[in-house]
Image (cartoon, rainbow, N blue to C red; front, top):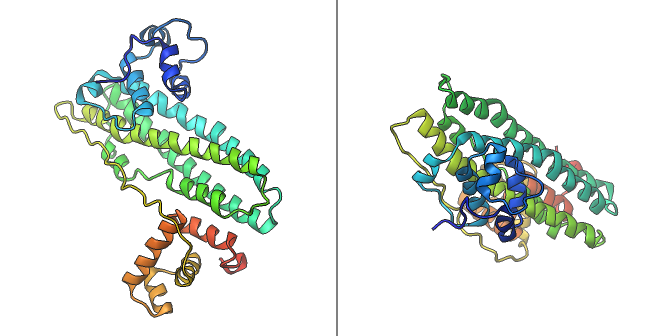
Length: 313
């Protein structure tokens, strides 16, 4: 059974999950709700109520999976509106707020530490801009053409799905660096402020990605092939092992080699171990640090004085 319905008062909808304020604002429902229902405000804003409810379900129910009937009832144009406004929110509000908190947090840190943290975060910001740029310039115009019956050759939603990268993995690495590797003299209020913002952005991006993969993609497939009903619901990632412990001396050596840009075979040759052993060490390093990406591990190594920044090209 669905958690929400279009007959609900919008105020009651938001009362059940305050995060829906942001979702509603991105589709154009913003301001005073009064006693009006979702259906009434959607009619006023030119929105499809079933689509708005569908988006709200994703943000409020971790186990929610859209049915084919829900997808058929919903309007892909309203999903595009949500995605476009989300891109603007992430870049012009969420990331700006995070940058302000980073500046506050890093104030007491040595210039070297400030530099590596800023370089890592700005690299993530650039990746995010490129990710959204592809969607704004290629995906959204393609779907808009499909809505009016124009099929553009040389592109399909399968191409988007095949190249759809994980946009919150490096953000997760950044979060772990802030929690574990920045010095204790950093202002605790600044650290908490930054962590709240990063956790909130990560959670929002996960919902955003779910909507792209499990609502937009199958809806566009229906537009591309009206007679077919292929719906692919993304399988949740494997649960994370939350067990943490200190890195061993060997793992620190492997981490330094990773930070220096060596490939697995080069690391194996350098330390006179097998490639399988290198892979095992790298898995353990990721498990213990909570950091998955090479740039993230490099910053971790620098902040923990395992390697000098001048040795990194």
